[in-house]
Image 1: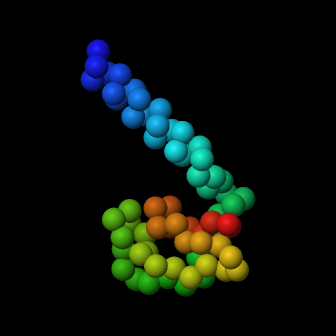
Image 2: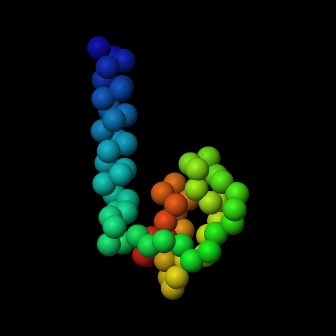
Image 3: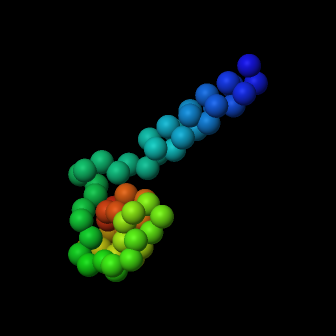
Amino acid sequence: MGVLNIILFGILVFNLGCAVNDTSPSKTKKPLICTRDLNQWGYSSNCKCEGSAIYDQKIGKCIES
């Protein structure tokens, strides 16, 4: 039972973390310009975003701050 509880707890924590990061389509935009290299998630490692948006390497999009 201990291993099952740990796995379920991990899933719960992961899902709560996803809910906190609001990356809904209305809050994300395509980057303006990016480097050609790829990071560990398969997206550009560095991009320039419009205005005050910040590039999120995990989803490969700019997020409005």
